[in-house]
Each structure stands twice: as structure tokens, then as C-alpha cells.
Image (cartoon, rainbow over all chains, first blue to last red; front, side, top):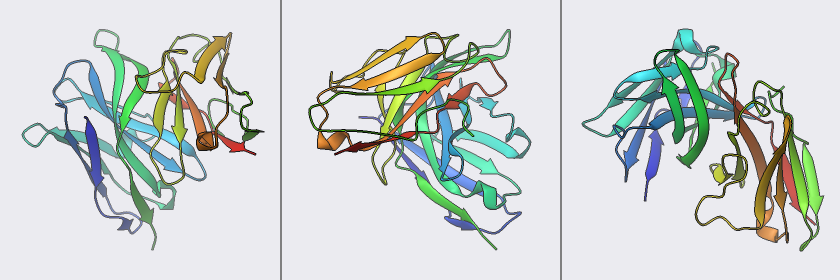
Length: 129
Length: 111
């Protein structure tokens, strides 16, 4: 059974960097044709896709977050992580990691999203001064 | 405002059927057969219940069904049960700058 578990600090101050880790069990993050994503959910904005990592280090980001975002992986620990810099109150949300199905075409740089089949339980992040 | 439009709430009595709509454009819902639906109970993570417009993952009740017509996708729940009370979200692939879109969610109340 595939399980994903998020971890990280729940409270940050504005301008700090949010760092979260997603530990994966029951599957390998190096598996072909699977995309490992971060999604967040806030009362004001609903569900928002943040980005994903795949194919041993390739990434695809939400353009609205790209300038502040880094998603990376540690294959030795079978986990992937999110770093979001210069956070503001607007970044307060429940953050989920998830296994995603899709297809990325390198020649065009196009990512086709299919669906998210496994979600972590989520971790709450609050940004407050 | 979410990219995909869903009604904020729907309700039905046990045993009845309800349908939740998800409206998009030809660049997302209408352009791809990659519409998915998620069920979320309070305090829980979303759960995949429909993918590729109408397919159900193993273990999901056949009371849940999906369809699409033009730029609008629909989720139908038949034989409503109390346990179906939850929030439901649609999602779609998009050819826009943001390739993963979600609807704003629909709260289902079982009366």
C-alpha cells in the first residue's frame, strides 16, 4: 500500500523559507511515469497545484510560484521536498504531497496531468508575524 | 475564483441521486479526457473517485459515475448514503499556463 507522509514546521514568519518533506513508502519515487506533486489547500483559494518532480530530478512548477519554489528529491531516502521562499500570509494553507499520473514531453516541455491517485494526510502551515 | 466552476452546495435525501457539474473551457475540460473527481471528508485528504472522465479506481463504489459534455463535466452519485456527505472537487488538465486546474469544490449535504 502506497503511503505518503508530510513533515515540516507548522509556523513561520513572513519572509522566511518554508521547507517540507514528503516520505514515500510502498513505492519508489524513481518509478517511471509517476509524478510526485505538492498541492496546497486554503479556505480562500481552494486546491492549488504547486508543482511536481519526476524522472530522477526533472521538475514542473506552477508559474505563479516558480520564482520562489524549489522541489527536490532524495532517492536514498525515497522522499521529496518543497522549499518556498519569502513566504507571506497568503502562503498559509494545508500542504499535501501526492502521487500523480501524467505525461511530460521533453521536446515541447508540455506536461499533461491525468489525476492524483494517492494523497498524503497533509500538514498545516501558518505564516504569521 | 477557481478556474473550474462548481456549485457551492448540493443536497439530497438518502436513496436519491444528485449531480455535481464542473464547467470549464475548450482549453481544459472540453479539450481533454483528463477530468478527475475527488471526495474530501472534513479534516481528511482528498480521495480519488473518478479519473479520465468516467473511470473508477478499484474499491470505489459504482454509485459514483462521471461524464462529460462539451466543456462541462459531471459527477453523479446515486443511492445517496449518509457517508457520502463531503466536499467534492473536480480537476482537469489544461493547455494554459497552469496545467493542473481544480474546481472550487461542492459541499454535498445528505438530508
